Image (cartoon, rainbow, N blue to C red; front, top):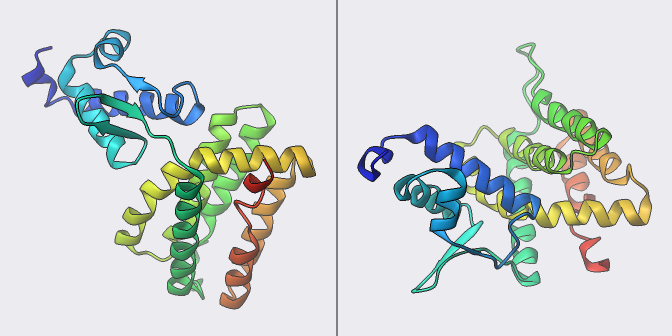
Amino acid sequence: MADSEALYAPSLVEMTTRRLRAEILSGELAPGQRLVEEQIGQRFAISRAPLREALRLLANEGLVEHLPRRGVRVTELSMQDVDELFGLRAVLEEYAARQAFPLRTDDGADPLAEVAAQLAQMKRADAVGDMLGKDDAHRAFHTAVVALAGNHQLDLAMEPILVQLQRPMAANLRREAALLGPQAGIERHERLLAALETNELDLVLAALEQHGSRRFLALA
Protein backbone atom coordinates (compact mmCIF):
# COMPACT_ATOMS: atom_id res chain seq x y z
CA MET A 1 0.00 0.00 0.00
CA ALA A 2 1.37 3.41 -0.96
CA ASP A 3 1.79 6.06 1.72
CA SER A 4 -0.93 8.21 0.15
CA GLU A 5 -3.32 5.26 0.27
CA ALA A 6 -2.35 4.35 3.82
CA LEU A 7 -3.54 7.74 5.04
CA TYR A 8 -7.06 6.53 4.27
CA ALA A 9 -6.76 3.26 6.20
CA PRO A 10 -7.98 4.14 9.69
CA SER A 11 -8.30 0.48 10.65
CA LEU A 12 -4.56 0.03 9.99
CA VAL A 13 -3.78 3.09 12.09
CA GLU A 14 -6.03 1.82 14.88
CA MET A 15 -4.42 -1.63 14.80
CA THR A 16 -0.93 -0.16 14.93
CA THR A 17 -1.86 2.24 17.71
CA ARG A 18 -3.44 -0.55 19.73
CA ARG A 19 -0.45 -2.88 19.32
CA LEU A 20 2.11 -0.24 20.23
CA ARG A 21 0.00 0.94 23.17
CA ALA A 22 -0.19 -2.63 24.49
CA GLU A 23 3.57 -3.08 24.14
CA ILE A 24 4.21 0.17 26.01
CA LEU A 25 1.71 -0.49 28.79
CA SER A 26 2.90 -4.07 29.26
CA GLY A 27 6.52 -2.93 29.53
CA GLU A 28 7.62 -4.78 26.40
CA LEU A 29 8.70 -1.35 25.14
CA ALA A 30 10.50 0.22 28.07
CA PRO A 31 10.31 3.86 29.21
CA GLY A 32 12.93 5.86 27.35
CA GLN A 33 13.30 3.25 24.60
CA ARG A 34 13.80 4.71 21.12
CA LEU A 35 11.21 3.69 18.53
CA VAL A 36 12.80 3.21 15.11
CA GLU A 37 10.19 3.64 12.40
CA GLU A 38 11.92 1.31 9.94
CA GLN A 39 12.07 -1.52 12.48
CA ILE A 40 8.47 -1.13 13.60
CA GLY A 41 7.29 -0.85 10.00
CA GLN A 42 9.01 -4.12 9.12
CA ARG A 43 7.73 -5.85 12.25
CA PHE A 44 4.12 -4.78 11.68
CA ALA A 45 4.36 -4.94 7.86
CA ILE A 46 3.00 -1.41 7.44
CA SER A 47 4.13 1.65 5.55
CA ARG A 48 5.38 4.90 7.03
CA ALA A 49 2.18 6.97 6.85
CA PRO A 50 -0.08 4.84 9.13
CA LEU A 51 2.84 4.26 11.50
CA ARG A 52 3.48 7.98 11.84
CA GLU A 53 -0.21 8.63 12.42
CA ALA A 54 -0.24 5.94 15.13
CA LEU A 55 2.80 7.54 16.77
CA ARG A 56 1.08 10.92 16.63
CA LEU A 57 -1.97 9.48 18.41
CA LEU A 58 0.23 7.85 21.05
CA ALA A 59 2.02 11.17 21.56
CA ASN A 60 -1.37 12.80 22.16
CA GLU A 61 -1.94 10.18 24.88
CA GLY A 62 1.44 10.98 26.42
CA LEU A 63 2.86 7.49 25.80
CA VAL A 64 5.55 8.53 23.32
CA GLU A 65 7.40 11.75 22.72
CA HIS A 66 9.00 13.23 19.62
CA LEU A 67 12.49 14.58 20.21
CA PRO A 68 13.96 17.15 17.78
CA ARG A 69 16.44 15.40 15.44
CA ARG A 70 16.38 12.29 17.63
CA GLY A 71 13.17 10.59 16.58
CA VAL A 72 10.57 9.08 18.87
CA ARG A 73 10.91 7.34 22.22
CA VAL A 74 8.63 5.86 24.86
CA THR A 75 7.81 8.52 27.43
CA GLU A 76 9.67 8.17 30.71
CA LEU A 77 7.82 9.66 33.66
CA SER A 78 9.63 11.12 36.64
CA MET A 79 8.18 10.71 40.12
CA GLN A 80 7.14 14.37 39.93
CA ASP A 81 5.28 13.58 36.69
CA VAL A 82 3.54 10.66 38.38
CA ASP A 83 2.60 12.75 41.43
CA GLU A 84 1.21 15.48 39.21
CA LEU A 85 -0.83 13.01 37.14
CA PHE A 86 -2.27 11.38 40.26
CA GLY A 87 -3.10 14.83 41.57
CA LEU A 88 -4.95 15.68 38.37
CA ARG A 89 -6.81 12.41 38.51
CA ALA A 90 -7.92 13.13 42.07
CA VAL A 91 -9.16 16.61 41.13
CA LEU A 92 -11.10 15.36 38.11
CA GLU A 93 -12.63 12.43 39.97
CA GLU A 94 -13.79 14.73 42.75
CA TYR A 95 -15.25 17.13 40.19
CA ALA A 96 -16.99 14.23 38.44
CA ALA A 97 -18.46 13.02 41.72
CA ARG A 98 -19.79 16.48 42.57
CA GLN A 99 -21.40 16.65 39.13
CA ALA A 100 -22.83 13.12 39.23
CA PHE A 101 -24.14 12.52 42.75
CA PRO A 102 -26.77 11.81 43.71
CA LEU A 103 -27.16 9.57 40.68
CA ARG A 104 -30.48 9.30 38.90
CA THR A 105 -32.05 5.94 39.63
CA ASP A 106 -35.62 6.55 38.50
CA ASP A 107 -35.26 5.22 34.94
CA GLY A 108 -34.67 1.60 35.91
CA ALA A 109 -31.11 1.46 34.60
CA ASP A 110 -28.16 0.82 36.90
CA PRO A 111 -25.91 3.88 36.56
CA LEU A 112 -23.02 1.95 38.12
CA ALA A 113 -23.23 -1.02 35.76
CA GLU A 114 -20.07 -0.10 33.83
CA VAL A 115 -18.06 0.57 36.99
CA ALA A 116 -19.11 -2.82 38.36
CA ALA A 117 -18.40 -4.51 35.03
CA GLN A 118 -14.84 -3.21 34.95
CA LEU A 119 -14.23 -4.32 38.53
CA ALA A 120 -15.50 -7.78 37.57
CA GLN A 121 -13.11 -7.76 34.61
CA MET A 122 -10.24 -6.85 36.92
CA LYS A 123 -11.08 -9.90 39.02
CA ARG A 124 -11.33 -12.24 36.01
CA ALA A 125 -8.04 -11.07 34.56
CA ASP A 126 -6.34 -11.34 37.94
CA ALA A 127 -7.63 -14.90 38.39
CA VAL A 128 -6.00 -16.08 35.14
CA GLY A 129 -2.82 -14.04 35.53
CA ASP A 130 -3.59 -11.63 32.68
CA MET A 131 -1.78 -8.64 34.11
CA LEU A 132 -2.23 -6.35 31.10
CA GLY A 133 -5.92 -7.26 31.00
CA LYS A 134 -6.20 -6.42 34.68
CA ASP A 135 -4.38 -3.12 34.18
CA ASP A 136 -6.62 -2.21 31.22
CA ALA A 137 -9.72 -2.96 33.33
CA HIS A 138 -8.27 -0.95 36.21
CA ARG A 139 -7.92 2.07 33.93
CA ALA A 140 -11.42 1.47 32.54
CA PHE A 141 -12.80 1.33 36.11
CA HIS A 142 -11.59 4.86 36.79
CA THR A 143 -12.76 5.97 33.35
CA ALA A 144 -16.23 4.69 34.21
CA VAL A 145 -16.22 6.52 37.55
CA VAL A 146 -15.56 9.83 35.80
CA ALA A 147 -18.11 9.02 33.08
CA LEU A 148 -20.84 9.05 35.73
CA ALA A 149 -20.82 12.84 35.42
CA GLY A 150 -22.05 12.62 31.82
CA ASN A 151 -19.55 15.33 30.84
CA HIS A 152 -17.95 14.62 27.46
CA GLN A 153 -15.22 17.23 27.83
CA LEU A 154 -14.32 15.82 31.23
CA ASP A 155 -14.04 12.36 29.70
CA LEU A 156 -11.72 13.70 27.01
CA ALA A 157 -9.57 15.47 29.60
CA MET A 158 -9.31 12.35 31.77
CA GLU A 159 -8.41 9.85 29.05
CA PRO A 160 -4.73 10.77 28.47
CA ILE A 161 -4.17 11.15 32.20
CA LEU A 162 -5.34 7.61 32.87
CA VAL A 163 -3.43 6.17 29.92
CA GLN A 164 -0.20 7.72 31.21
CA LEU A 165 -1.00 6.54 34.73
CA GLN A 166 -1.76 2.95 33.77
CA ARG A 167 1.77 1.68 34.45
CA PRO A 168 2.20 3.62 37.75
CA MET A 169 -1.25 2.41 38.86
CA ALA A 170 -0.24 -1.15 37.95
CA ALA A 171 3.03 -0.82 39.87
CA ASN A 172 1.06 0.46 42.84
CA LEU A 173 -1.25 -2.57 42.74
CA ARG A 174 1.69 -4.99 42.52
CA ARG A 175 3.41 -3.37 45.49
CA GLU A 176 0.16 -3.35 47.45
CA ALA A 177 -0.30 -7.06 46.75
CA ALA A 178 3.23 -7.80 47.94
CA LEU A 179 2.71 -5.90 51.18
CA LEU A 180 -0.92 -6.63 52.06
CA GLY A 181 -1.88 -9.74 50.13
CA PRO A 182 -2.93 -10.56 46.56
CA GLN A 183 -6.51 -9.34 46.91
CA ALA A 184 -5.79 -6.03 48.65
CA GLY A 185 -6.05 -3.91 45.51
CA ILE A 186 -9.26 -5.58 44.37
CA GLU A 187 -10.77 -5.10 47.82
CA ARG A 188 -9.81 -1.42 47.81
CA HIS A 189 -11.74 -0.96 44.57
CA GLU A 190 -14.67 -2.94 45.97
CA ARG A 191 -14.83 -0.46 48.84
CA LEU A 192 -14.90 2.43 46.40
CA LEU A 193 -17.74 0.79 44.44
CA ALA A 194 -19.63 0.20 47.69
CA ALA A 195 -19.32 3.91 48.49
CA LEU A 196 -20.64 4.81 45.02
CA GLU A 197 -23.58 2.49 45.61
CA THR A 198 -24.65 4.49 48.67
CA ASN A 199 -25.44 7.39 46.31
CA GLU A 200 -24.35 9.78 49.07
CA LEU A 201 -21.99 12.49 47.84
CA ASP A 202 -20.22 12.93 51.17
CA LEU A 203 -19.49 9.20 51.41
CA VAL A 204 -18.30 9.08 47.81
CA LEU A 205 -15.94 12.03 48.32
CA ALA A 206 -14.56 10.46 51.50
CA ALA A 207 -14.03 7.16 49.70
CA LEU A 208 -12.20 8.84 46.83
CA GLU A 209 -9.95 10.66 49.28
CA GLN A 210 -9.19 7.42 51.14
CA HIS A 211 -8.65 5.41 47.97
CA GLY A 212 -4.92 6.16 48.30
CA SER A 213 -4.05 4.99 44.82
CA ARG A 214 -0.40 6.05 44.92
CA ARG A 215 0.62 5.45 48.51
CA PHE A 216 2.34 2.11 47.83
CA LEU A 217 4.55 3.61 45.13
CA ALA A 218 6.27 5.63 47.83
CA LEU A 219 7.20 2.38 49.58
CA ALA A 220 8.80 0.78 46.51
